[in-house]
Length: 362
Image (cartoon, rainbow, N blue to C red; front, side, top):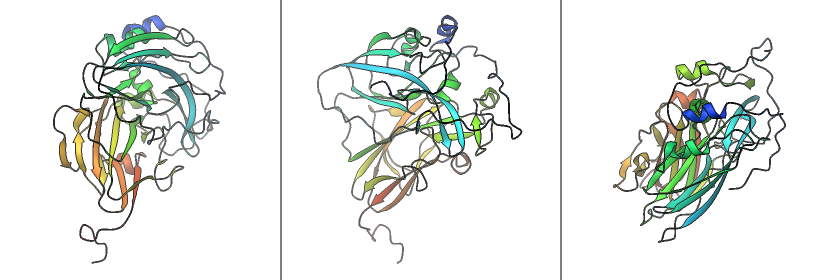
């Protein structure tokens, strides 16, 4: 992973209080009760939408590292930087996001059980205001590494090293004290530790990050939305999103549906950053042929299930067979989040129909 080359247009100030934040790193403690600094408001309630710093904050769902093809422990040099940007949630609506490497979810990391990761972690002072760190659920150690990676902008880089002792798909996230703010605005991702014998082969893999965005505006209200502590406390999000942007991977989105073909098997990694709500991953028009519940790659996966239960702060993934063409809509089956809050992505399956399986005009 390399530092994002985007130039931030805003002037950043030095974050203070790194020592006190480090006390809470990697744990759930008494989080700050302070509200965001008040800004002048237009008569409509929100400030006008800001010019985005980058074209999109959304990570590419097809950007998945290749499967493990080695059979002995390896050493990996991993570089990770934090980057804060203003970006569009939907047209006319902007928000301030915090990210790993400039995208939501953070880049997927893929290693093998027993591998060693040497992490170099940085919080550049020209791209950040807040104190940050990284907590890997895939490692033993204080705060999953968060205690020893907590730094203010310009104080790094720092380095840690850890061994991936247990296999599974795990989340990593920022844990500086205000966990909900940092995760809700994008600071989470997936680290997959494949078992020694690997995973079953599939034809395509996709990677999504679900998260809740709590703001001082209403869903769809044009203008610049700021993080809202009151909304977070009541766990009533303004948006529930895939990859930080509403509808990007649908028929109406900037990118449009993802592509697959009949006869293939696809795998979907579903990282529920939260920070609060349980997700119910469901593929409309298909089922999970195999579902690796909460990232479990040791026990037999669930089979032929219509949906799953995925807690906040966990990763699950599922495989789908594709016998017939047509769209598959990926939804959280808490459907208000789809209809009212923005969580939807589509895989467009192309190929020859099989009328023995599905006949639209019998």
